[in-house]
Image (cartoon, rainbow, N blue to C red; front, top):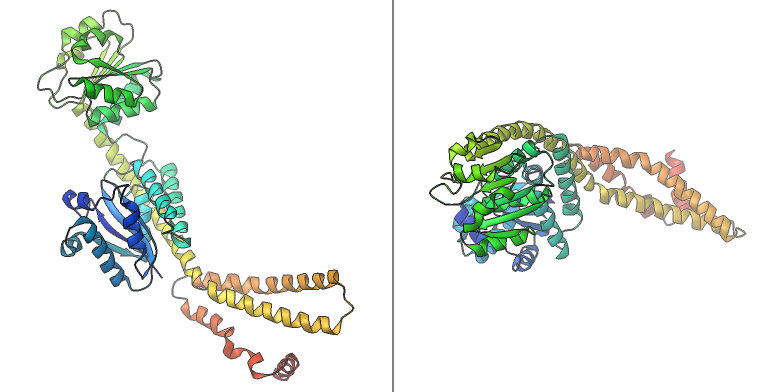
Length: 441
């Protein structure tokens, strides 16, 4: 049995390859079923995000054939030739595969270390695979462990504590100035990706209300609706400035939208400070606005300094996280190794149970006067004795199996209970077995 992880991500493949491989909601099921039908694959799961299309699975030892089949299926789907895909494919097995899966779930393999989205994407991919019955015992255990590792890293390290996006850094700055944002009105000028991210973060902090303004009014309405906000026509911005506590500007304008005189008029009737974040390039707020008393103006360069500092801190925390990954990989590999002796332990218990049944049959023939209750009591006592006798050797062989390079000990244990040492095959009755045992003693 082999655990593998394979696929394409932002480290191994350019975006033009990844976008062709991206698996949508509509065709996820058909792709997964094709992959799951590969003869040498026992379990499989697929995760598809903007930065990666990866497959995690369990197969037999014929991994080269598995790799070829995966490439063939993905080539048919993406229309990218197999020869091209080979150049970008990574393929890890066993310990390295497990380590990669743990690093992905913990966002250590993400473009932005510590980003939280990957945890949800990781969970969703497993849920889908489970719905299609493509995962069973091994991958279920592996994914549960991966999510536990992710949680452990997030709670015991600081990889996700500090802002590493411009939009989130802007929101944290607002929180530093005002503290609680629940009674604050927010005006967002612009309706692009960064503006939307800022609105999302602010909405999660339960601001009083979000107002959105954009040159294209329909886009302002669309963004405002996402966060139960209100849209303002672009030409009405000056009129609304006195009502805003936080203003986030993110547009593609080539010249300032907010000028010093506009802001000066707006703050005349204000008692509280006004916080303005200009994340536009070029800047859309006049620099002189910062000269006004009670006005805090930050631009994208200010925020980048915060982000870069936080990224360095996350990288340091990631080193601590890697030690946790190493420990958890070793634990999981040990558990996998114990699975190898499960069939042996089962056969030993089956052997002991057959002996129990034979001995009880003989005993009950000799003592026909026993009632049903008495027979059950004797049976339970024998079961308990067998379980106690087998517990120590079972724990011993599991411990030996968990440690690598102990195959010789496992083989001895297996041989010890193999049929070639079964005296029942050399005799015709239980009495004869007992005679042989007495002679050997």
